[in-house]
Amino acid sequence: MSDAHVKIMCPSLVCRKVLSVPAIARGQTVRCKACGTVIRIPEKAVPREPAAPPPKGKERAA
Ligand SMILES: [Zn+2]
Image (tube, rainbow, N blue to C red; front, top):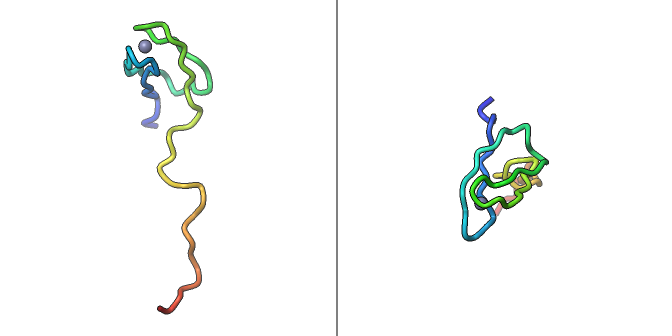
């Protein structure tokens, strides 16, 4: 698995440090080592595709 770590950016506008946290910490919170801001790690990575599948099946003749 190439998803052993999750990279998350500190939400603090004055910090913005990119933290690398273990994927098992998803759904939990970590503290930024730089500024101490508590960051919640999303359980899933940002989806690249919309949830709804593209329409398939019938083809329309123009
Ligand atoms: Zn920070």
